[in-house]
Length: 124
Image (cartoon, rainbow, N blue to C red; front, side):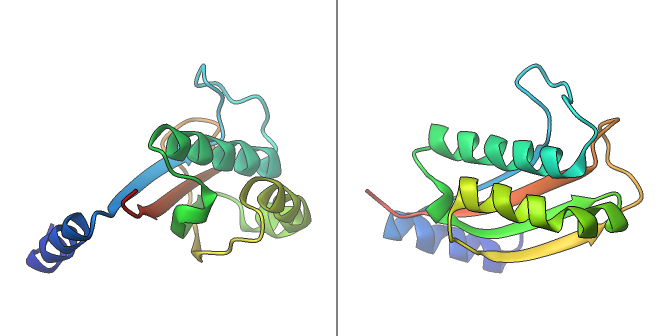
């Protein structure tokens, strides 16, 4: 963490806000993939992110950035309508800054997508 990052972190603490950053893939609570379908894995990863946020007292409305790492561009493009429906069901009409990065593989065997979310939660 650089000096600028530490300064921003101190300012957020003084303001009472805190940042949550988590990465999730599309597996279940037993760390097993229930499907090889990219859209379903995206949906599960998004549900996992919202569950982690809820444990920290946050929700979809606090997500300010989302980065996706996907192993198959063609499959992702074909799945966009399903992904959009899952997004609206889970996140509503919230659209944070988003980036999709296409990669050759992910660490966990069978994973097709990994989502990294950053949320900023204001002081209560």
